[in-house]
Image 1 (tube, helix red, strand yellow):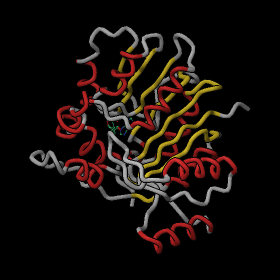
Image 2: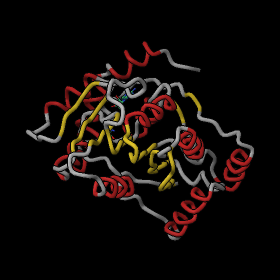
Image 3: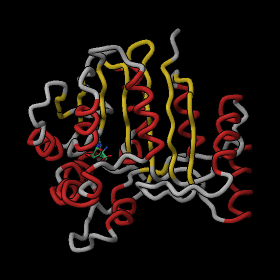
Image 4: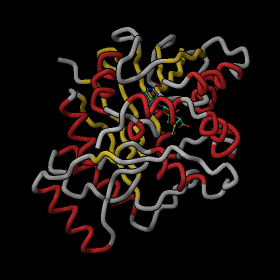
Length: 282
Ligand SMILES: C[S@@+](CC[C@H](N)C(=O)[O-])C[C@H]1O[C@@H](n2cnc3c(N)ncnc32)[C@H](O)[C@@H]1O
């Protein structure tokens, strides 16, 4: 099933409730920042390695809180937040707070109007799973990045698809047989405004357009010419604390090792996928 662009536009990008809730609701906690520790660490690491004046894009920045928070902390880097939604960007523009290194633009990352090689870093936090064609967006990201450009990606609905040992074996078999695919979903784009607490779950169920297993994302990035630098998935992840279970550090190291050696069997460890990749210089 493929959603029509018209339907998505009307019910998603023009859905005022969605952006208002992003602003007042799940983004409002913790000073509006929704970046998890691992994602933050990857972004900070990448930002610290950038030259003065380098360009950074947060694609699908929503109401712009994350990118503004980063712009306040890295004044020597030029940040641009882009989003397909005029409503989202209108919220973002209201709070630039005189920051000289921050701007926002309405832009579709699947068909971007931005220039080739304009950015040294692209941040994609909780965006790919909301796109009608995320592979097209990955190709656009590669075009927008300069030769040593990096991308930091976080998606919230991939990873392991089944629970327990059986689930693990099923996912493992799928991986070995290369029959794991991203799947189109059928979101409703309806938000219950009264339900502040249930909102995160509502968000996933109602606004995710596709489900992208982590190994599929890695393969797609590699096909698009990216080299994976860091990869991680989590079974349980609370947005701000990322409660790791004992042994998680070792697991993380093992997963990294597997990804980098290209064997990559234990790829379905959790729902949330966080990774960083570099554009391969040809
Ligand atoms: C879950 S929100 C994430 C917002 C922000 N990155 C954050 O972490 O708070 C997903 C965002 O992707 C945007 N989006 C959806 N399709 C897009 C597209 N084709 N191009 C750019 N942005 C898009 C939506 O408008 C929405 O603001």
